[in-house]
Amino acid sequence: MVAPVRIDDPEDPRIAPFRDVRERDLVGREGRFVAEGAVVLAVLAASPQHRVEAVLIDERRAEGLAATLARLPETTPIHLAARNVLDAIAGFPLHRGILAVGRRAAPIAPEALVAGLGERAVVVVACGIANHDNIGGIFRNAAAFGADAVLLDAECCDPFYRKAIRVSVGHVLTVPQARFASAADPIGLLSRHGFEVLSLSPSAPQRLIDVVPPPRAAIVLGTEGAGLPTSILARSRAVSIPMAPGVDSLNVAVTAGIVLHHLTARRRPAAT
Image (cartoon, rainbow, N blue to C red):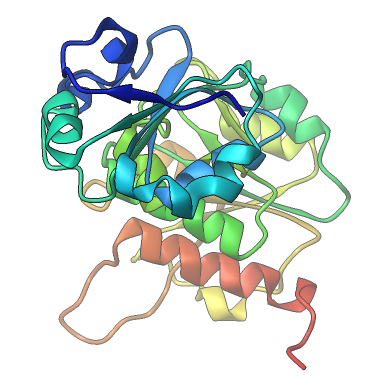
């Protein structure tokens, strides 16, 4: 591990990538992203796909992060700063006191990702999800229930946004993912590869609980307001999650968790 460098000036050019991350956040900039917090940093440090380019931490957190920092390549710059300097660099009170700049792995095409999945697989397809909390929650649920991949349409927000990574507890960095081009046909691609495609709709007459999980299943999730387009509902098996009277919808990340639990329950070993 390279010797940490103390930063006393918020304008120090060595920490330029960390400056005002709330406004700039590095999204879409040469494949870089910002990771925040001890858990996310540990996931990133252990990732075989993505890599850490630099770290900036509250000097009081350094000792507790020693094991994680030791896993970084010897050439990774590590910067330490007092809390007030750290907050001035970030542009907001950084309660977790830990930031890292990462570089994401080269993206994989949806066709290649789906083609490489096993005979038994569960895939989540997100359509038009623009809220970063929801995207992060979907990835967290995908990891928790052992989904094999998350596929995003062209309208979804970037899961590598700092908040989405944080909400996912780092699982944006662990769950295989791919993004469709705007003119792509997710239903057609999944059907060609033997997936039964389930779409979620409150008005669907068939209940999720009555669905026998197929060997290869894909669930399509839409926005909480408009829901899924009729073109997707017509080409998939629409199912619903019955709710109490007066309630007509669930948060999309909660929906993902319920559906994934149902589809993967028999794949998980019983608790001992």
